[in-house]
Length: 516
Image 1: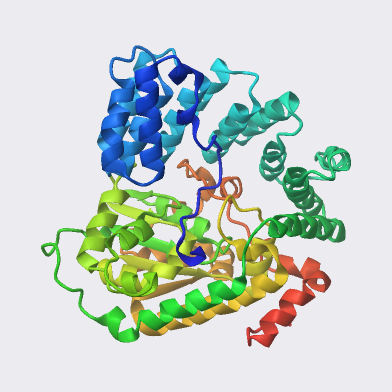
Image 2 (image 1 turned 135 degrees about the vertical axis):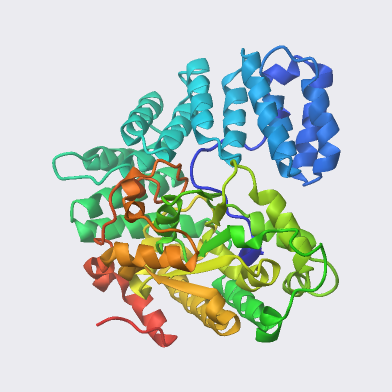
C-alpha cells in the first residue's frame, strides 16, 4: 500500500540479489547454498531463520566474502547493531575481497551510520574492479554524502568515461554544483539525449540532468520542457492512482481520532523503558526544507540524525495486530510495544543524547508517534504550495512519492496532504510544532533559535552555518546543504507560472490558496 511503504534512501545502488549467484560463492557449494538460503529468508523478512544460514556461509572464511555483508545485514535487521558492526570490521580485516563483497559491506555501514567507513569500502571496491562503472557511481554517492563534491564529480566522470550509458552518473554530476553559463554539461547532455532518445533511462536521468542545468543558467522554458519530458517518462512506468492515496490519507485521519491521539497510552512495557524525550521527528513533504532543519539540529552538541529511515513505520506495523484493515490495526497497536520496537531500531550510528528521524513520510504516522512516544518532539516543516509542488516535480526520487511526476496528481495529493495536516493540528494541538521554510531561510538565526527552544536544546549561532556541518547527508539535498543557507528557491515557481497552470487549477479547485 502506497501510503505505508518504506522509502529507499537516495544514493548508491547495488544489484538486487548478489548473494544468489556470485562467482565466489559458486566455488563453495556448502557455503553457497547457505548464503542462497539466508538471502531468500532475508528477502522474506524471516530474519531469525536466516541467521544460522548466514553464519554458516562465512564459517572458516579466510577472505572477505559477499556473505559477510549478508550476515551483517541479517544482524542489523534483528536489531543487533553492535554485532553487525563487528561482522563488518571482521570481514575488512580478512582482506582479499571482491568488489561486490566490499560494496555490500559499504551498504551495511551506511545503515549503521558509519559513513567514512562506507566510503573507504567503496574505494576498495573501485580498486578491486576499476573498470566497473557502477562502483565508481557508488563511490561518487559516498563522496557526495560526506560533502566532498569535487571528488564526487571526478568519480562521476570516471563512471561516464567507462560507460556513457551510466545515466544515473550524469544526473548525479549535474546536481553536485550550480552550473553556470561558462561551465556546464548542457551540450554533452543534449548530444547524448539525441543519440539515445528512445531509451527510457536516458530520457529519465538525462532529462532531469539537462532540465536542472538549463534551470541553473536561467533558460526556464527549455528547462520545463525537459522537466516535463522526464517526469512524464517516469509517470508512464508507474502503476499509480492518486485516488487511492487520497482515500488512504483520509482513512488515517478517520482512525486516529482526536480522542485516540490525546488518550493516555495503554499499559505495556514498564514506565520509563523508552526515553522518548531523546527523539526528534522532522516531517513534511519532500523538498520542503526538512533537510535544512535536520542540518541545523545536528549542528548543535550531542545531536545525531538517523536520516531517512523507516524505523518508526516498521515498529508500528510490527506491533499492529487484530482485526480490520492495516490502518485500524496500526491505530490499535500497543503504544509501549511500538516505542520499544522503534527504540531498538533507532540506535545504530553511535551514542547521542538526542536522535533526529527525518523521513518526510512520517507525516502519515504523527498520531502513532504522539501515542507511542509522548515526549518526542515533532517538527512539521511547511512551504508555500507552488514552491513545494514544483520542488517535488523537478526531482527524481529514488523511490516513493509517485504523485510527484504529474501536475494533476501533485495538486490532488497536496490537497489531501493538507487535509491530513489540518487533522493533526487539531488532534495534537501544541505537541505539533510548525516550521515555515520561508521564515527559516529569511531569518535563520531567529528561526534556528526557536527550533532549538522547541526541542529543549542549547542554542549556538554557529548551527546555522550548515556548510560547516561535516555529518553525512543522503538526501536529495546532499549537495545543497554544503552551501550556506540561501533563499533563492523561494518563489522559484514564478519562472514557470505559465507551465504550471494545470497544477494551479487543481489546487484552486480544492480551495488551496495561491499567491498572486
